[in-house]
Image (cartoon, rainbow, N blue to C red; front, side, top):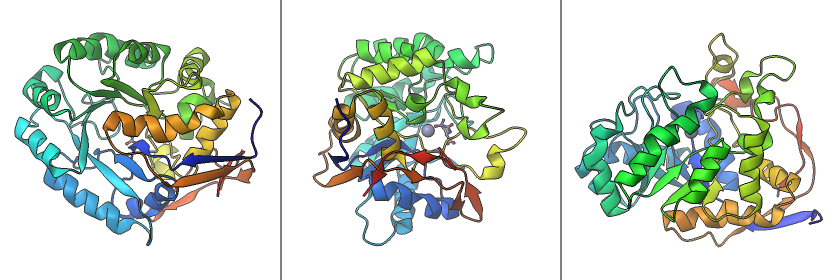
Length: 346
Ligand code: NCD
Ligand code: ZN
């Protein structure tokens, strides 16, 4: 396919996003609202969003932080713990604004210490999710410290996710931010109740980007970048237009100093240019004709929501990404900082 100079798509949605809270929230949410109509908001605040009441209050804070005249709609999630009750799931479904429940294996990533220590403790709650159709959104990494960090996704699928999906044949599951050929294969082999989100970094970079000329903390996220053959497998399934893979940036802002540190935080900030970065990856793969389904159609279909009627336009025009953006009293270093991106959102 020859590259067009302009691309018009239905307005996309972001099915996996961290917007934080307070000053950080006010600093980042406009970037997302400029591009996306809706976003699934991750609940890993401190303390986590574990109840519908907390999700309602967090949603109000997000709406209050939006610039005037944006139609952006936050889709809320609950943070699953060992003690989340079936009643809370029923309240979530009845609320109309909670669209999923997030499983963080305890210790797997940023602010996951309140996460699930053993999924068997959640069986009653998962039964209610299965019955009501509320999706389980999964951070798919094994937490056993013996497991190599690059193998954690594959081991989680084998030891935890595959058995879980056998035990709950009706449970709807999104395997979030997939990074491996194993995850692609697992989702491909699944049925309509299994979907996956893909970040821009996991299709634009492989693990070499962590060590390009030195340690690169701004390329560190979880699950960590993998080998080229894994990046290629993810891009291949997207280039084929598979309907159960959809856009989820996992944009996760951290203050610059918290990343450039002896023990740097995991998380890549991409909200400033997400759709442009995806356009670049799809262009490289010769798959621009599948970008709209990935960004704007497959997610709503999985979540049972209407597609957006509004359109956005991307032009093939290079622009320079700033070295940092304000983040409350701090700054955040965005993906591609100081470099250029070949597509621009009008
Ligand atoms: C996320 C964060 O910072 O909240 N970090 C990340 O590297 N992706 C947490 C997460 O989604 O794992
Ligand atoms: Zn995330």
